[in-house]
Amino acid sequence: MADATALAEIDRRIQVVEDNLRQLVEQAAAYSGAADEERSASRIADQQAKLDVLLQERAALSSKG
Image (cartoon, rainbow, N blue to C red; front, side, top):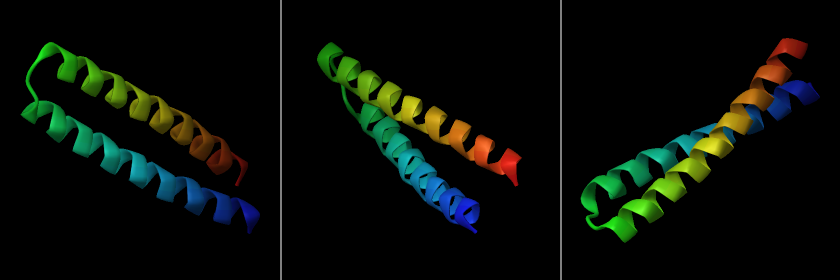
């Protein structure tokens, strides 16, 4: 049961990060200028790294069950 709860929480966090990524990509498309592009790229990379960690956690939990 704990694994199911943990998996549900990870799935919720994945959805949040994926939504953040979608919003950042939309914002990046609207911005212009090197400083804005660099900031957007950094934020997107940060969110992608978080997503990668969450996906690894989910895979590890899924393989236990």
